[in-house]
Length: 131
Image (cartoon, rainbow, N blue to C red):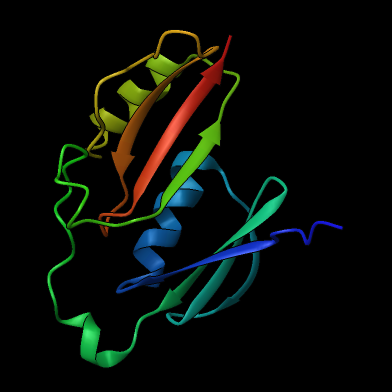
């Protein structure tokens, strides 16, 4: 029997800022919260938890905000959101808000278009729209 994955936790420097990013741009509702320390967002069939990182890590610079960053030195996790609305319009809205987003792309043989971006702390996200 498979054991279900129910939550992904990422460590962040600024819980409120990253929470606002995912609430504003992906409309994820808050499930539980401890101000400035911890928040859990409902993301479909899984929860995305934001945990404030330890004090010794908070003063280091966040990763580059460029989706084209050398992936060997950047974050190793990518969140994938599936939308049913206009993908190009969603991308344009985020870009207009100053969020770093990559170009739209599609790979031959795959039934979806997508683009990548970075949240305020450099974590990679992808937004896709199935045909």
